[in-house]
Image (cartoon, rainbow, N blue to C red):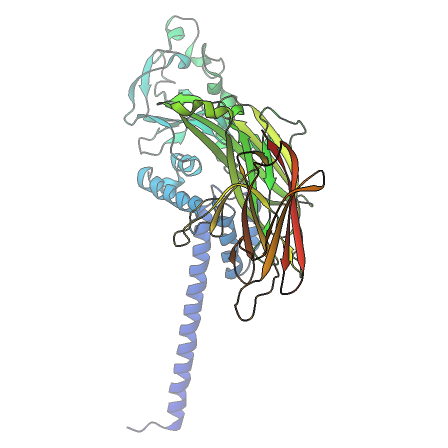
Length: 523
C-alpha cells in the first residue's frame, strides 16, 4: 500500500505534535517535581528556619536560586566547615527519622509535639513515662493525693540554650491514640479533674479548698515552673527557632559591662590562601590557675565555655561560633594546674580587611565570666615580596599528609601550637612560624633562593642574631608560598622584654621583606 504525499504530511504533523506534547508533559512533570521537592524541604526545616530566611526563600524564583539558598542554609549551621560532613544536617535528619519511627500517631512523628521537641533539642536527659495512664499518685508540688491519669510523659533537660536550666516538659495523650501533646498544666493529665468528689488533692480531702478553685488558686508547695504563666512562657519558647548554644555568653559580649573574672589572652594571626582569602587562626589561652577543677574518678577536670563573634566595620557578622575548652589532669599532675595553660584555636577564612572580634568565656563550675574585644586587620595581598603574620609558637611539628589530622592547630603539613601570651622561660625555645609570598623560583633548580636573618632586639639593640644564608629554615615551598620554621635558643638572654625581627631576602629578585613580634622572657 502506497501512501499519498498528503497522508504522509498529516502523519508527520501528528508525530511532531505528539513529540512536542510529550516534551511539554515531561517538562511540566519535572517542574512539578521540583516544586514538590522544595515544598518538602521547607516542611522538613520548618522547626529550624527563621522567619527572615523563610521570607527570602519564598521570594526566590528559579530552581538554581533555591538550590543555592539551601546549600547556604546548611553551611551557616555547619559546626565544622573544614570537614566534608555537615554534622548538624546529618543529626537533624537523624532526629526526623527517629521522630517518625517512634512518635507517629495518625500523622508523622516529626509533626507531633514530641517530635518537634526532639528535633529541636535532641533526646532528653531523662524520661518519666506512664504509657498506660491509670492510677496516679501526685507529687507534693502537684497537691498530693491520688487520681486517674491519661497516658503521659515527662521529659527533663538539664539545659536548653535560649530556654535555661532544669527544663521539664510534660506531654499528655488525652485521646489514647499515641498523640502526646504539650501540657500547659500538670492538671491536664487528670482524667477526674471535672468529676465531683473523686481524685481529690490532700487539701481538698481535708476541706481546706475546693476542686473548682484549682484553675484560680496556686497549689501550696507548687514549684515556680509549674505556675500557669511559667508553663505558658516555656510553651512559647519551645515553639521558637533554636537559638545559638551559648546565648547567655552572647548577651554578655554585647553588654556594656566589662567582665574580667578570668584573665585570658586572645591573639589573631593571618596567612593567605590567595589574593581574595586569608586563613585566620583565632587563638585563646586561659591560665589553668583561673579554672575551677573537680575531681572525678581520679582525674581533675575543668571546663570553660566560649562564645566568639567576628563582625566587619558595618556590623555585619562574618563568623560566629561557640565551643568548650576541656582540661584534664591526673592525680599526680595536680601541681601543674598552677602553671599550665589551656589553649583553644579556631580557623576562619575571611577576605582581607578590618574586623572586630568579641569573645566571652565562662568557667562552668564557678560561673565566673570574662569578656574581651579586639580588632583584626588582614592587609591586602601585595604584588611584591612580603610576609604573613608571624606565630611565636610553643611547638611546631609535621603531620602525616596522607591522613591529615583534623585539628584547628594544623596549618598545611605542620601542627603549630601558638604561645598566645608570648611569655617564655629561659629553657624554652622561641618557635617561629611564618609564610612568604611573591618570591622567584630558580628556573634551573625550580627552587627558591632566599636568605633569612633572625635578630633578637632589646631596647632596639641586637642581642642575638642568626643568619640562614642557604634558606635551611624554609621547610616547605610551592609556587604560592614559602613556609619558614625556626627554633631559637634563649638561654643566653636575661629576663625582660624583647623583639624578634625576621628579614627575608630573595636572592633572585633582590627584594626584601621583614616581620617582627614582641615577646617576654621570664626566669
